Image 1 (cartoon, one colour):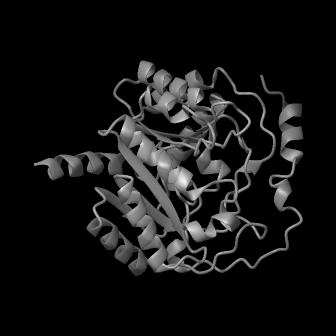
Image 2: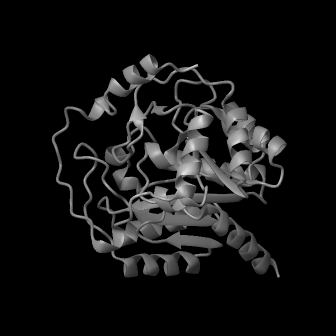
Length: 318
C-alpha cells in the first residue's frame, strides 16, 4: 500500500537524472495545427478517478500526450504497466527514468478491473522498458491480457511492447496470451537511433515485429514513427519498406513534440498536407491501415482504427 510519505519522496526524485547536465535546447513555438485544449469534462474526471482508484499508471499522463483530454473524455486511457520508471533514457521520451521497483503482482487484476469499470470495447496496454527483468516483463504482459479476457471477454486488446532486447522467448510468451494487436514502435529512422533511441537497435525492433508474424501469420501487427527529429522523406519511405518486408499491417505517423529543454529538439514541424502525402505513400506500399497526422499517436483512436483494420483485411481477401 502506498503512503503519502512514499509518494512525496518519489515526487522529489529528478524525473530525468541522465538529462540533468545536458545543455538546454530551444523550444520551438508550436504551430496552430498542433495546439490542443486543456482537459476538461465529466468523462475526463471519471476516467482519471478510476485510474487513481486502481493505482494505475497511464502513458497518457507519464508521456504528456497532447490528446489526453479528448481520449479520457471518451474513457480511452492507455494503461502503462510495470511501474512508472523506465530503465532506458530515450532522448524523446518524458517517462521517468531510473531503477524501477519490483513488479506489482496485483497489477494485472487491477488493470482488468479498471477496464471493466470503464466499459472499454478496445484497450491499449503499454509499459516502460524493464531491462532489469529476465524476460523484460513478457509474462506480466501475458498475465494482464489474460486478466482482462477473464473479466471483459468482449474487449479487444492491443499491446504496445518494448523491444525485449536480448530477452529470448519473450515474444513467444506474450503471443501465448494472445493479444488482438501486437504493436511495437520503431519511433524514428535508423540514422537517428544513436542519438534518439540509444538503448534500442533498429533491426532488433524489425525482427520482433517479423517474429510475431512467424508465430501467428493471422496476427495484426502495428508500428509507429515520429517526424520532426531531423529525418528525411526518403528515410521515412525506407522505413515503410522495411516494415512492409516484416509484414506489418498498420502504420502510425505523428509529430514529435519536445517535452522539455533537456530533450531532443524539434528540427521542424511537418505540415498537415505533408502527413496526408505520407499516408498516401504508405497505403500505396501495402499497409492495410495508416494513420498519419500531427497529433497521431500509437493509441490515438485505437478502437476505431482496429475496426477499420479488420475490415481492410477482409476486403483484401475478397
